[in-house]
Image (tube, rainbow, N blue to C red; front, top):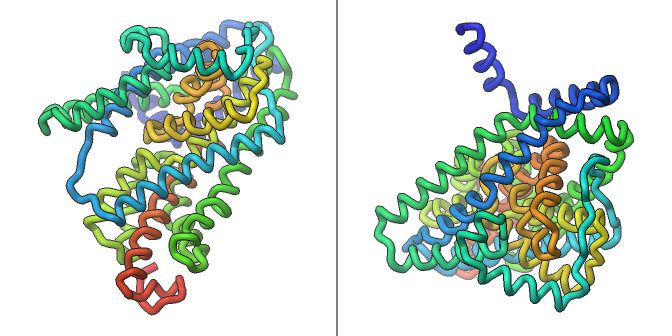
Length: 422
């Protein structure tokens, strides 16, 4: 018994990234050496099954909880932060749409998986299905993983709770969201075994050449995220501050992005961001609210992941996506990203919601989620770094814009005279 406890402790103490990498390597080796051991693929099926079971509940409670939490410390700075968060997330999704149109990638699924789908005939059918799915019974939406309906009813419940519920009830909803997030953490703790099974199934069916396709997918995801981090977000900050934003951008990437890259959790990086805001001389009353909120709704990287993976899935099953539908996808991805869990791989669980726009079944969408976990060693780390560093950058942008209006000098690294500790 003691030996077993020591093994479990050693497993839990080992970095999740390292465990996933080991699972990936072992799965690939067994897939090449022993392609007839099909029972190993059951590990991947169980892992995907757990994600399929918890994902609808997670989306519902996270969105309802986020909307029912209120604060009395809202002012113009906070309003500007909120707009920056939302606009940047939408633009990240839009950039991903254009990149996906240029590089029409497909996802390689195991050969024994049925990916035949009947694509919608056009935008009219897509909108028709979308409206019908929105108003479906919420219990039915949860049981059938209708993420459009889940999003709609969760938003209504969250707003109603914010207007009518007592503080105790809102705390209970928050506790429920935390509890479901903890279940997700437990599932993700076993991700190395699930990924071992998924990689085994893919390699035994398609050979090692499958990693060439995954490599292209990683390059597209990371490329979009770098473009958002180094072009889109700085451009937004430059418009607001009317000065060169890159000194601020690089400070946020260095002091927040690097730690978030390894923790792979926006929620876990909140203390780091709060300390960085203090060193940047920001108002604590403002950043103590905006930083935790940013960990929930400022999800540029999540929007990129949801959009790219959804369009890759659509390409795989032959759905012809036109520009108007893609713009609708951008809105859905941006809205869905705001409900992404603050745990490693949280955005992947929202891919089925976006896939529902094109009538892609939950089974196909969850296989895409499984592929996402295979490439998540790189994708999720870069995604979290983009999200978390953006939390601080936009909070600082709103604060420094207020300084300028008040006639107060900007920090020295932005061309002013105010001293900071960064």
